[in-house]
Amino acid sequence: MANLHLLFSSNALHRIPLAKDDALVLLNDAVLLALRNVASIKNPVYARAADIEARGLTNLALAHTQVINDEQWVALCLQFDKTLSWI
Image 1 (cartoon, rainbow, N blue to C red):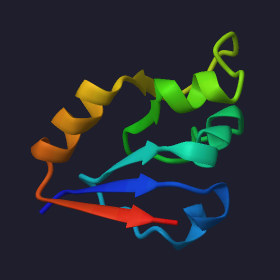
Image 2 (image 1 turned 180 degrees about the horizontal axis):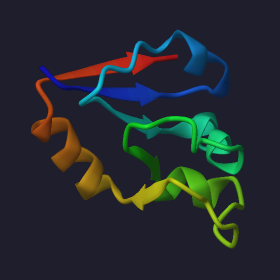
Image 3 (image 1 turned 60 degrees about the vertical axis):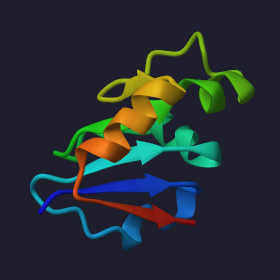
Image 4 (image 1 turned 90 degrees about the vertical axis):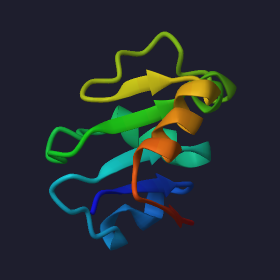
């Protein structure tokens, strides 16, 4: 059973129990984590484009993070068995 974890703040990452088939979406201030080395996370990592733009990060290279729009975010939510929110 795969879970999609929605992370809304950068200080909750250490609490997320990512399983092998899970994925992580960075939202709100959590998109700032994409600036750090998220290469240690073996799961797919996504960041919401609107949140990146709102924080002025659009011209930065976000390694190991796929930028997604709202439609792609909804599609991800439908793709996974459960969606879990972390604040």
